[in-house]
Every structure is written in C-alpha cells, then in structure tokens.
Length: 334
Image: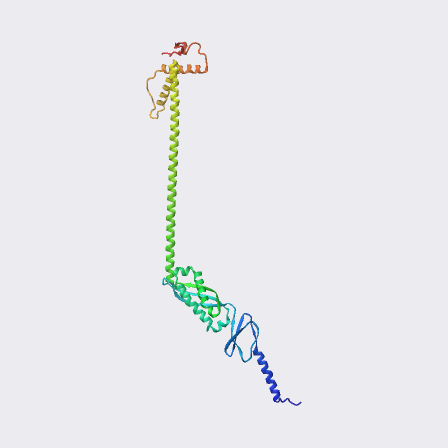
C-alpha cells in the first residue's frame, strides 16, 4: 500500500481548518451565572458580556476582567484606635459588598479589595475617634450605621454597593478594663446605698404617717368619748333635775312620803359609797337605825300606793296621821 504524501494544497486546507477551529473557539465565550466579563478591543473597553453564550471578534476583541456579582465578604483587620476621651481600643470588623457596575469596578480602581479595606480602616478610626469610650462600647449599632453610610458613599464611584458593615470586636487595654470594673463596682455600690436610703426614707415616712393616723384616731376616740360622757352627764343631770322637780312638787302638794323616799335613797347611797371606798376596810360611825327603818317604811308605803294595795286605814305599826288631807305613816321610835 502506497503511503500518503501531503502536497501543498492539502497542507493549506489543513491549516485553514485549524485556523477556523481556533477562531471559532476564541470568538465564542460562555459566561457562567453570577459573573460578568469585560470586553476590550485593542486595549479599550467596549462592552460587558452577560451570563450565557457571547460572541467576540477573534484576534480583535479579548476578555479584560472576569468579575463576580455575588456578595463578597471583606475582613477589616484589627487596628488600635484612640477614642474621643483618649482611650486606646483595638477594633476590627467585617464588610459585605457587591459589584453592581463591572466596568467601574474593573477600570475605576486598582485592587478593589485593598482599596475597600483601607477605606474601611480610615473611616473606622474617624468614627470611633469622634466618640467617647462609653459610647463606643455601648453603641455599636450607631458605629455600624455611620461606617456603612460613609463607606458606601465613598465607594459608589467604584461600581460597588456596600450592604453591611459590622464591628466584630472592641478590646480596651487590660488596665482600662480593670479600671472600668472598679468603676462599675463603685456605681453599683452607690446605687445600692441610694436604694437603701430611699427605702429608709419611705419607711420613716410610712411610720410617721401611721403614727399620725393613730394619733388622729385616738383624738377622735377621745372626742367621741368626751361627747358621750357629756351627753350622759347631761342626761343624768336632766334626770336629777326632773326627780328634784317631782320631789319639790310632791312637797308642795304635802306628800311627805315622797320626801321620805328621796331622803332614804340619798341616805342609803351615801352609806354605800362609804362602804365601797377602796381605802376603807372597817367603818365605825353612829347611825340611827330608827331613822333608816322609818325611811324604809316610807319607801314601802310608796310601793303599796304605787301598786294600789290597801293599807288597812293604818300605816306602819297601825299609826297614821293626816297631813293636809293625806295619809303619812308615822315613824316608829325605839
């Protein structure tokens, strides 16, 4: 079998086919999802290729930069920052950004991540340097919001959108942490003493209010008791006056029995008061028993008259005497 010896035409055809394959391969580009590629023609940017199949002019157009449109995480390295009140703090953070204009991100800035990192560091120093230590430690959300606003505004020219900026760590020096601990302890002790003093004050006020109410109630009780005593004395005096008027009327009418009853009652009350005195145990005094018995007899006659009992025309011991048309029992004599 005779071997194939290529001639000049065959070599030309083969070269053309190979050239065509190379041109087709270099002129058809497939861009992955979430990416965009810039196209340069003779070194100048012309357009951006979107995800999918794209055509280029071989040997004239070329791919410039391949950029991802996904959100990218950028670590902000730790650095020492001086606060407004001259306290040194070690701060670091993290930023989240996304490319929205591939042409600007490719041609408006060189080394986008390095530029964004330095921008974040300088603005972090600026923001923390304008705040006191207490505000820095307690108001991270304000720091994050200010950093986001400043960095996003400054990076708009680079075709990126900064979505979030977060402070990861704020570390004061050890001696400052120890001083803050002592200050916090002193503040808590101060608040505890204030609360104790407030409690004592409220307790004293409540005790004073209780004593005041107790005194008012006692005074009202004494006033009510005095009013009741006065009313009782008034009624007792009225009854006494009424009894005196009745006796006076009986005397004026010639009723000696009423006089005997009145005198006997007073007589017996006086003896009872003497006998019930707490400083007396034995009482010796002369007493006319006949007078007492006569008074008792007068009381008995009054009772009989009150109940309508017949006295039998006599009186005590059958001896009566008439006084102004009335009957008065005679007093027996020993």
